[in-house]
Length: 364
Image (cartoon, rainbow, N blue to C red):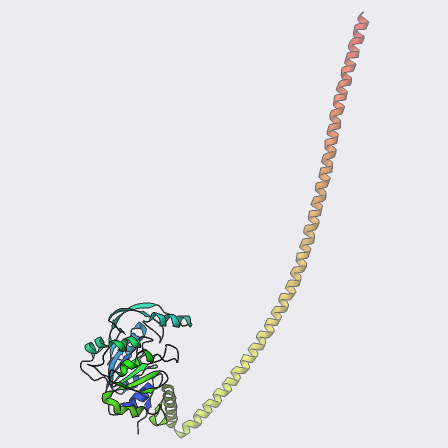
């Protein structure tokens, strides 16, 4: 019977691989497109059991996490492709890709793009030659968001032949199979198909064909696995139970009394909160009433000031009209005075003329 295990992988890949490699205690893996070191990770369980391997992850964020949490692995910040050189990596959480069409598909589907970085690219042959050091690769996982075909077509699988291949085989973010473009070529290179889990297709090399029957059934209760969150819940319950077991019998009564005291304090707190809430509501009502009364008083004052201003304006208007009338009278009197002066001068001239005429007549 298989011992219990915690499955960290996205689709129980680690459960199947543990079942298919029963005789290997501390093996060697390669994970191309490793993503997070724990979440949805195919190799985390194996690493915890003493396995080591190579994690290929060009996304800088997840590469940093891998280097922190996988110090015994080789963590490579490169991309694997059909050719070596430099590639543009479109950054997306869990969906980073070097394939432009795939990146465009993800963004048009509403995925959040985080920019593009230039990364070194290796072929699968380059990776094996530089970093395997002649070791047998017990399983190779490839999840590269659309670049699987280019990687598989470029390597002949002659020098290094992993026992098991786990290859993402559907179109990105889809259930449509993408493996039709590369599976025949892989089978011609000495591999046999053995299982499809709805996302990945599993292959064993001809030398390990006996392992195919270990993939006859999907992950099930007899694999004795549980999920990480279930494991944490079990650990939490066990921890709490151990704490209770350490409490002496008399201490339980003390805890009950303390709990009752806390319940009483909570009731007092709730009562105080209710009282304060009622006082606050009443105070708000008083403030609203005061504000309404002030508004009425303010309206009356505004009306009074308006009436005073209107009366003052009317008085000013009347005074201006009276001033204009008086000015007109003054102007009239001034004109009459000027006419009287002229008439008086004319009469004086006539009188003077008569006086002179009379004086001359008297002399004669």
